[in-house]
Image (cartoon, rainbow, N blue to C red; front, top):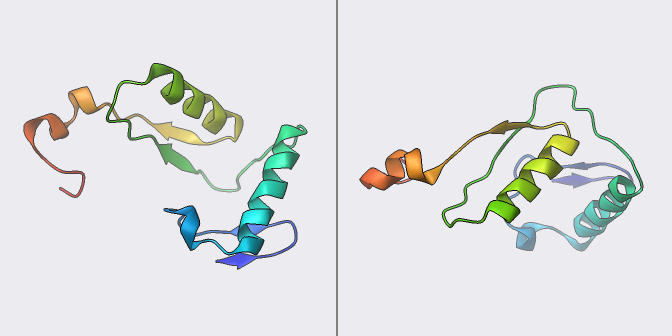
Length: 92
């Protein structure tokens, strides 16, 4: 992970505990830019998948709206219609 003044390059973000203080501050500053109306237009398609294993319509739709505002393509995943119901794990 490399942090610069205005840009943070993260290949994968699984846990905030893995971020340095500088990286966290860079993310906070970028969030403030979005709050103030900045937009994001990726050069290449970026995808997001939300894995909600408990019913939470409000949270699910809030995440989707935020992802759409960021220009992300959303890959739909519904536990009720997935193979998880048959006992398969996400790893499978």
